[in-house]
Length: 150
Image 1 (tube, rainbow, N blue to C red):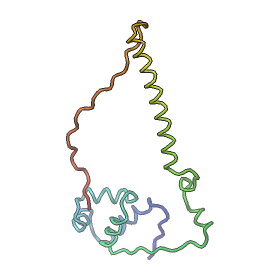
Image 2: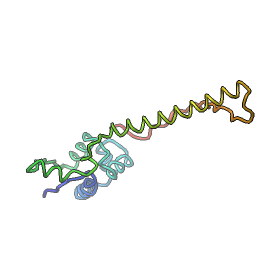
Image 3: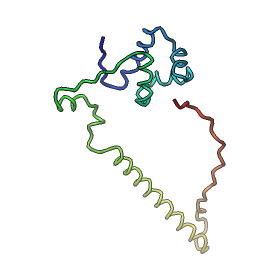
């Protein structure tokens, strides 16, 4: 029987169903893939965040094939795309505009701090706020590895 998958979120119930139809637990699947049960549970809970290589490996263990079919016309494809993928502005452009705003805000803050520091250094302004000083970040210990690479 064939199942149509049009969004990444539709993968989760299919993966769970195929695993259960094969009579496997998450722990058994994990051992066949060479990962921990928790790692496999994360993949099964959110398969849209997994790489294609990992998904293909899981599907191979489940003995499931993928069949791709072409839609009849480009207009059909446009109708199926989510609105966020049809927007004219790319995510990179959005990120750049946010970066610009941050840079402008930071520059304004820095300029204000410099003026206050200069006024304080001259002694001409009483009660002027002290210039902001940056604190050094505490050295970070090596973080434990949270995910397995497989």
